[in-house]
Image (cartoon, rainbow, N blue to C red):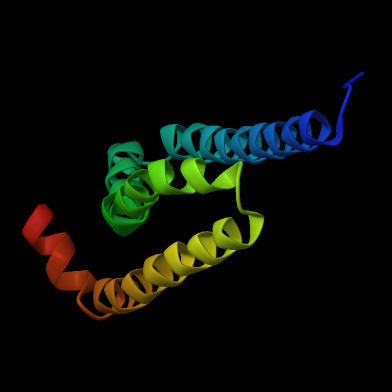
Length: 117
């Protein structure tokens, strides 16, 4: 189907990403159906809880990934080792930020929910 290894690898990454996205959407759909049949307001509570739990990833991980993308794409074609090092460095920065933020979100969960609601 594909003529070279890079095209095959790209197709595999795309299929894995689509699979992950599809599973995420199916899970959200199932929870939404369940919440919509529960007590009034359950769907709203679920939606707000989902937004709160995904905020650190949206703010930090996506921002760092978008900022690193030009550098990653620049070195991807020329130096595979530099690409791997830059990707690892970016992943470490994301994890270094997300772990304390997630811990703070867990510790202050009641206060954050009261503040938002």
